[in-house]
Length: 143
Image (cartoon, rainbow, N blue to C red; front, side):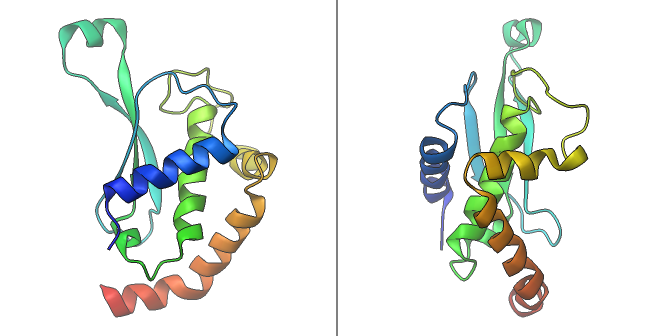
């Protein structure tokens, strides 16, 4: 079984390889979340509750990955593509302190274009192919 440390290492690898030019301007955390049927990953602001940080607007960003992905049956490239997808949201200014580049996070294929630009287009297509072919069978078997 994979754990949060494994997930942190995957994110660091993807950042070095595909997002080296991206400015990470706050604490970027990643962890496994609950097991879900439809949501593969998400990104959100993780507000610090201290008064100073609330007044200054400081926050951490947290990427949450589907808990099913702890299972080593799920190919590593599927997890990597989901991490890359969420990092695209970060660099586009969604749940990050960076300027927001678009009004909606997926409109006009903005994430797909960013994934391709960063050399992750093939990985994303393979991930989508695996999900389409195997996901429902996996859920029936391992739920």
